[in-house]
Length: 122
Image (cartoon, rainbow, N blue to C red):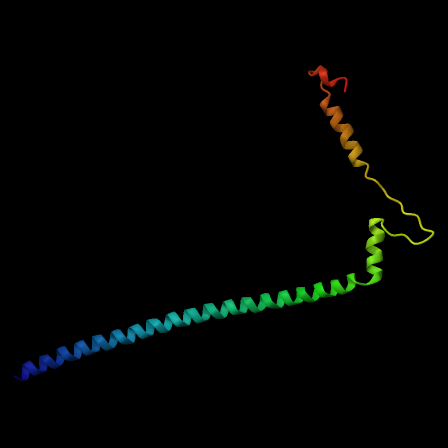
């Protein structure tokens, strides 16, 4: 009887250790998963904070440019550059690009070829 009780105790102890070890292993595994998720979320939060800082600085720059563009000096400058504004006694001079004319002449010369006589008289 003593051996049977001893073997029952050993079986009970082994089952207890296996179940307890399984529970401890499961909890440790879950703890590792939670730690990984927490570190991922911390990294993402830091990225979002830096993105917020960048957007805030861009917002300040845009607000500064808006306030600058609302001044009469800036509006006058833009209108002068576009040739839409002049003060009394001033003349507006518009300079046209010469490249467009040169391109059209070059295209006409390229279109006239020796093997296509119908292009000779254009």
